[in-house]
Image 1 (cartoon, chains in turn green, cyan):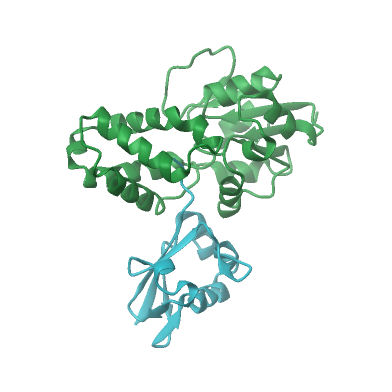
Image 2 (cartoon, rainbow over the protein chains, first blue to last red; image 1 turned 90 degrees about the vertical axis):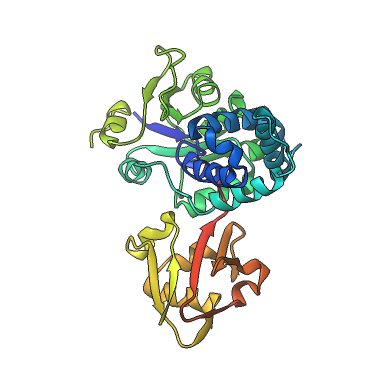
Length: 231
Length: 93
């Protein structure tokens, strides 16, 4: 049976959280009042701000720069701080993140094991150029299919973007792997794909009957077993 | 003396896993020539950093912590003892 595995990109293949945490440490240096906030908590606060603006950013109604500033002002307000240093904090955050690009551990090995045995693709929400730059820089190409929301005109979990990705694959079975329960797991299941939920931060699983949960890609033999490939 | 070049994690496999490279140069060179020197030893690295002869939009190069975009871009001078850091401006929100 011909099969495919499709991956989300940000925080599934590319470890953006690793860079984000370094960025947030730089923010704490600019806003020392935040030093008393544990990094995990600060990250959750940042994530909440990010989520609040996610749709507007992806739809192009908010530039990356505006979004960063809104997130930082939001964090300042959450912790009762003035926002006068928010722009400096953004600059430090963005600057620091650049020094920590990396793939999620195990991705390279997993791709090596999958290539030639299954079709591989990426389905990602984001701007075309940004996402294609990442695929190039992190050496994730070639892929059998790439669906980027800006190019497709639909954001996950909209079924349209999943259909677009599957359109030219000619496979009988496809599995989606992603870190977002709503966007990746529910989106994939909605059009009849299987799903693997990458839950690196061990959040409570909303429904174990819907998807297989993994906490990382290492050891890859576990992932290969789930995909029914023997290593 | 040499120039120290810090390599970002995704490119280290092209540099035999090295985190930093020490590159012998004459007294001075430019960022572009330095990358050409790296390419002669570590094939593929230039293609990751340049596209059509220009530094890729998401690649940033710092010479002694100064962003070369604010100096002379790829023509920025590099001297013995300098530290060149390559980063990728592609992190998320």
